[in-house]
Amino acid sequence: MIFSKTKSLESKMDAFLDKISESGIVYRRGIKNYMKNEKEDFDLHLEQIIALEHEADELRRNIETRLYTQTLVPESRGDILALMETSDDVIGRAKDTLVELSIEKPDVPDEFKSGFIELARSTSRALEEMVLAMRAFMRDPINVRNYLHKVYHWEKESDRLAENLKRSIFASEDLRLSHKIHLRYFTLHVDTLADLAEDVADRLAIYTIKRSI
Image 1 (tube, rainbow, N blue to C red):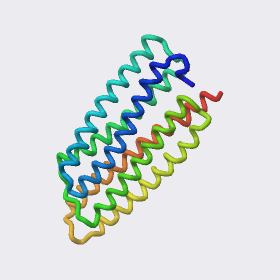
Image 2 (image 1 turned 180 degrees about the horizontal axis):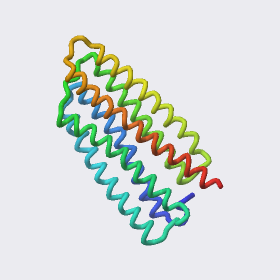
Image 3 (image 1 turned 60 degrees about the horizontal axis):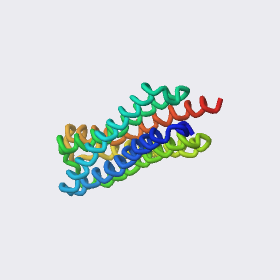
Image 4 (image 1 turned 180 degrees about the vertical axis):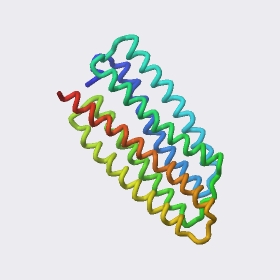
């Protein structure tokens, strides 16, 4: 265990990962709320994810400060800092997606709403498996691979769903080109969450090998 001698830091890291995991749930529900025109629930989840990102940022800065000033786990410090930075990008993208929905308010025809909901479910699964892989890296690195392949699975599934959704949008004869482009933009926004989770997984794969050498 990386933090076997620093239990308070381990607790803070767990709290940081909890915020990321919770943000995935809130993000998925927020997308579903928007597609089902549940404005009050959407606004609630938007407020929650903004708060979660802020709390995660505070925890990340606190952990980074302790790692530097107290010279904790020097052999793994660089890897941990890099993982925290890239995982922080994931929660940032989840928040940004809901914020952009609240600002631009894209008009999503009924025929495409289920596609967006399914895509959000798939990308949030990639995020969930990413968090489990990070927890394993901290405590039980031999099991990291058990979660990494699931991150890659859900990233590929998200790409497939996003492509199908975009093809359906651009095949529509009832939408203007500008409308199609707007919907494509949000398809990419939702899909990118899984790409960022994959970036974290790639780092974890390398760092796990380093720890085993």
